[in-house]
Image (tube, rainbow, N blue to C red):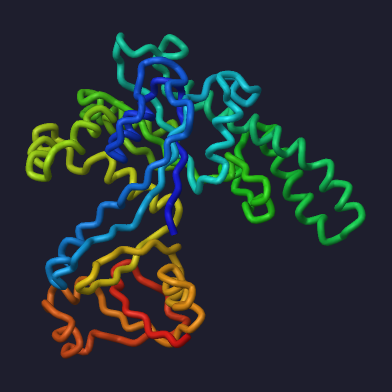
Length: 357
C-alpha cells in the first residue's frame, strides 16, 4: 500500500524544489509560472531507523522502506477551476491522490516572483482552498442531476443522493468535504479534492524557521491540521550530502528533524497509516497498512495468497528483539507469540506469516 500525496500550491511556492529534494530528481524548477507542465511522479522511502538495525542483525542483502508517492503538478492560480493557467488539467492529475500537500510560500526573495506580487500565506491558502471547492462544485453539479433522477426511481439510491446533496450544500457554503466532517464513503465515486485529508507545508527561509512566533501564527491558520515547516532549498541541498555531513549541517542550522522526514511522518499520521516489519537474510522491509489492520489484512499486503490461506502470524516486538539480541533469545524469554485472524497489528511488530494455499 503506497501513500500517494498530490503536491499543490501557487506558482513559485517551492513545490518543484521540494519534489526535487524528495526524489533527488532534477525536474525543472524554473522561476516562472507553469514551469511544471506534465505531472512529475516520484516514489520515495519513508525514513525508518529500524531497518538498518534489522539489516545488521540478519545480515540482510537489502533494506526496503515503506514508500510514499508524490505527484507534483503545476502551480494553481485564481480561476484554475475555470481553466485559468490550464488549471483543470492539473487538478485532474491529483484527483486520485490519497492526500493533498499544499505548499505555501513564506520566504522572501526578490529574484523569485510571487504570482500576486506579495507574500501572504493566509491569502494563498484561501486561494487554493477556494479553487478546490469550486472544482468540486463543478464535479457535483455535473453528476447530481442524473443521480437525482435515479433516486426518484430506486429507493436504494436515495441515501447516496442525500450525501451528494449535503456535500454540494457544504461546498456552496465554502466548506470542503473533509473539513465539514462528511462521510467520504458515499462520495467516493466523485473523487472530490476537498474530501481528502490535507497536509500543509510552509516553505520558509532559515531565519524564519527559527522564529517560533511566526511558526505559531502560521500553524494557527491551518489548525486543527498539522503544519510542516521547512526550507525546501535547504532540504534539496541536504539530500546531496552524505549522512555525517548532513547531520553536521542540521546541527549547525539548529534543526532537529529534516523537513522531509517530518513530511513523511505527518503524511502517515494524516492518512492513519502504520508499518509492520519483516526481517531475514534476503531483505529487511517495512510494509504499509492502515491503523487497525488485522493480521490477515497485513499478510495480504505482501501477497494476496498470504491473506487467502492465512493460518497464523508469528510475531515478536522490535524492541524485544533489539534488547534481547536475537530471535532465539526472544523465544527463550517467551516473547515470541502466535496470533490468529483477529489480531490487530501493532507498529513494532516483526512478522512471519504462516499460510496454506
